[in-house]
Length: 100
Length: 157
Image 1 (tube, rainbow over the protein chains, first blue to last red):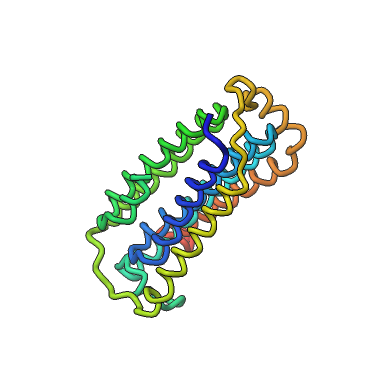
Image 2: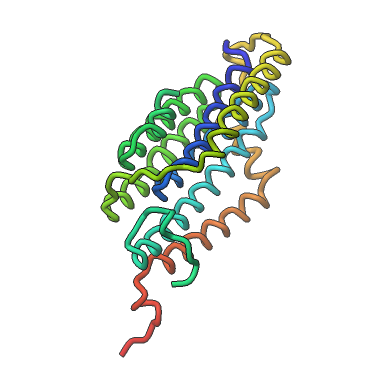
């Protein structure tokens, strides 16, 4: 059985990868995928703690996080499509105005 | 882990999306190891299935090409890289130092779908209903946002 700390280290690594991708990427879709990577890292630590403490509530929390991530992905991708229609670009450096 | 690094290394968005699918499949395997069979199934269905199909669909719809290089700010590299190294070493040290290595038997882990359903539909009933409303609002928002500007006026002549 793998100890809890390894799961936490992997979770932290995934979260750090998400943060780095969020900061250095310039494509808005890739930035969005980095956010999903961060959510997955947090989910892994939730499940690891749930297994460690024998508490099932952690898994229910992961379920809720997944639901919220699905909603966020739907709305975010709709926003990306809308932005692309008006700006004709996916580069976040060129999307610097909120108004049309 | 390799998939996560690959997500950063690839410059084409579709390659990043494929490596993200690899990460999610690996995470589903980790959930199985941790005894959460229900969550592993949900991870494969919702994340690797639905969300990634949305991503790939949008990437192909918008015809996303190579990402162009921008030079980052120098101060971010000067401060950020040593800061991140120090923070990660500190975190790893604290986690490894505080952790016990007691083993847990494989069969003793919770995570049967019936137990999760009991918890989800009795103790967490109100959050469950609230998330269903949230999903509904998200669907409506996505439809409004993604529709063409011409159809938003809603006039039928």
